[in-house]
Image 1 (cartoon, one colour):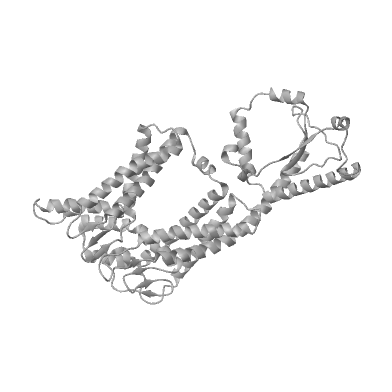
Image 2 (cartoon, helix red, strand yellow):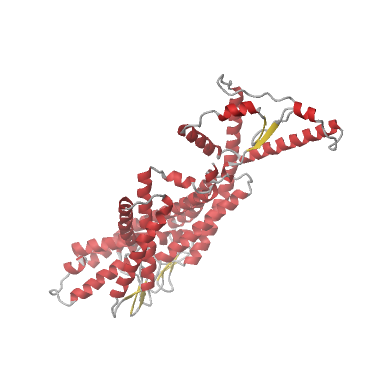
Length: 494
């Protein structure tokens, strides 16, 4: 509407209806709703405009959480549905009202995109406000997830962020090299002050699309700027392109620039970072499993980029520009392979390094605990006979206390909240220990116990011999406890 007001036109009349419909159509484009025209379909829409309604819905979600009573964090999806349902209905209604003979918005896509954007952005706003009111940190929410799922999420986010950062650097470098052509193209358009501002806004809105296109170039499949065109590291074949200054970053026809081939290392760097972070919080006991989880991190990253490639590309209506953007399935497959292989190798190396580091740490803690004197106020330690095997690690043999001592222990005061938090902190810190060392110790303890039982049976003359009641009453009883690994315990049981 600002562009229409700044342009030469007659007085207000029947054009105002078309102007309002155009404004509604622009609002739908901001929600990534495609529309059809006489020449074809317009589906190459700017991803940057989605941030505007997303931020507004995020603010509305926070306002909703402040005004309404939402008792638990698990009820956030209800508030998100309360926002997304009416918002999708409004988007569908506006898609019907904005229909003209020249442009017909897609009502199903308006319903879908309106619901998805409102649900995600509004739900995040509600969740953020509830976390702030209840004093919950973001790390506490991640702790509720299983260790492996959390590590895969962290690895996928790190790989995706690295790829996007590499794509942004590649696009800005290409635009800086061809900056004189971009300035010349802007001067040829002569947009003026208002038109130049709108032209800048449009290019900023298409910046996320350009970053995704650059990532597809770094992955290898490249992208198209029209039918029978390709921009890839293997070849650059272009025809006439729209007069948009940011398109000056496209390379010339022929072989790809040599400096741009350095971008081919970005997917492998992203995979290495994702693989290391995947194994950082959840090292594997079996070293052969680490490459598998690294490759899973690469597969999830490839699926995410296939979706981004599908959203970034599209059609501009005309026959020559009916195909603009990358192939979603090719980008997904190549990203899964390149990032997955690099992540698998990095995860295997990182897992071995973490295991060695944790082994040294456990040994140092054991040596320190053995050299540390026992405090006088500590509970009495029952000395076990020499013939009683004592396991190390997860298996522990302790003498059972008489009932009088148990009654005294039951009368002890309950631990305070600070003590419980300290215990919880120690349990969380124990997750980083090497489970391989603990399992080996548990096997050794079991082997020692079985050997001792066999020796006792041979000394007694066989398992069929029963002991007398007086002998059993005189013997002391011992208990064997096995601690489960922290990641094998449900959060509600800790």
